[in-house]
Image 1: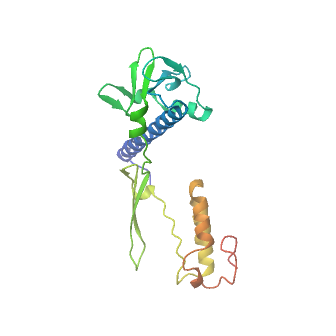
Image 2: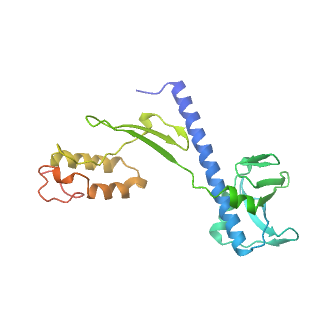
Image 3: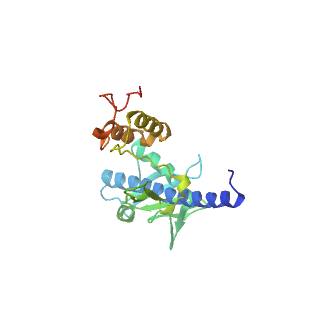
Length: 221
């Protein structure tokens, strides 16, 4: 069944909200990396100076200061590249902190920005909760799963659930079909833990008709 216009717009708004939350987390991680590396290289560093990139709508780290003269800043390549994750439209000024507390522009027209090292180190050292999963277990039926991504609830049709629970009642051919379906549907990011779980499934001793076949490569004969 195709989606209605209203459903498509609702989906657009939901995904936009998730993208915004992800962008904020991305920018804070990038700012923290720059602040931490600068402090390690220059323990007296108070601020990092950045400029608008001529390659796009993001920043380049150019210098640092200890409250007086600005010095050139030479960061390792991977940390220097983190400035490309500081997107100008999401950076504020004054009371409007924008996505990153401690990062602000001093002259937006000329593309001049300042990063407060202490504040970024204090406020941006968080590992965001990307997904929350609520599993309501029915011992006589399937589990009911609810998911939120970056604080935004998602619809059941947007969630794939992979259950690795061999237990009593499974016949080997049915388990092989279930295993192969899970592996075919799972994303790359879930393949490794899924394969590890399928290689030693809880309750596996109760699966009938396996006859010693390998959990991952065995076939239904």
